[in-house]
Amino acid sequence: MAPHCDTEQMMQVAEGTELPDVWRQRSAVKVGIAFHGRNMLTLPFEEPHLMCESRFGANYPREGAPESLEKEEHSLHAADSSNSDMRDAEDDISDREEEEEEDEREGDQDDDMLPKKRGPRKKRSGKPESDRSKVRRHEANTRERSRMHGLNDALESLRKVVPCYSKTQKLSKIETLRLAKNYIWALSETLSAGKRPDLLAFVQTLCKGLSQPTTNLVAGCLQLNARNFLTDHNGEVMFSGRSPYDAMYSYPASDVNTPPGHSGSTLDSSAKPFRHYSYNGAYEPYYENPSPEGGSPHFDGQLSPPMNFNGIFSLKHDDPPDYGKGSHYGMRYCSAPGRAALAHNSMYRVSPEGRFPYDLHVRSQSFPAQGEVNGSFHN
DNA sequence: TAGGCCATCTGGTCCT
DNA sequence: AGGACCAGATGGCCTA
Image (cartoon, rainbow, N blue to C red; front, side, top):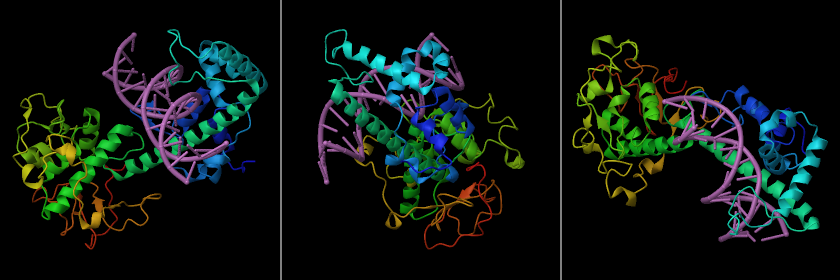
């Protein structure tokens, strides 16, 4: 018997045995997980009160009809799913059994008399083994679901340690991985260079190969002009042709406090047409490999960035309830460009005014007061 | 409506 | 035998 906790209903939602899909989706909406207005079906792992030891694995409730069968029914009755939602569990089980029998009569070949491909249509054997196989299949589904939840949980943790984490605008999985790879690469190159990095190159590396929406998000978090970091279809960074500092900051230098987007410069239609940005400029000196994304034909053979400081990288976040413990060193995000939070020992200096929005620290380095966090990174 | 993204189910494969 | 892992298939939701 699974231990009871307050998440019993949530577990039933996850199990899909008693609540229809629309209810599950509403549960996901309730926890506020969305990306560009699209609600995900992700469970709220970030919320400790929703996490109990019965969350995963064998502690999932396994009584009740298999959700796989419910899904089959759901697809078969998609037209009147609202009516099926009103059925009680007993009727559901009865209907599922009937549909199972129909499936069994359909045989093991598709329309072209070819072996079945992978997919939801199940091959079933005799009745005695069918019951057992159903149970095993059900348990395997539960494990697989838990495994994927764990994978998503890890991905969510990754989202929190790459720049531009946002609970309301989540990066997609693939974009999270790309940004994380770029981030590791950029940090590694910075450390291996052993000197003050080129900031434009750093941000360009971050945005390398990212989609335009993600580039916009990263640039928005950094309060930069995303147009200067867009990549073309080959993954090469497009550059507007302006000076690096102008490219970094779309707003006029005399208007530091003007948020991007308010000045209108970000969308300035009079901007020069893009031209292909050459890394022979500020980028090249700090990056022996010009790109983490295959801009160099040799990159595929060197997928791992060079490791520095024994490979230790960690991020320092203020008030990080679930991932910040133990992170005593690393990158600290400042709350806004131009703030005095840029420490003297910061490796990052974008301009004499110190307008780069974050600074980097490595182990053994001291860092200033931690009362400031970059809200633009982690909102 | 097409395409992107996602969760889920499913069967195959590998390993213990 | 059973679990972990993987990838294909499917359907839902959302945006352009």
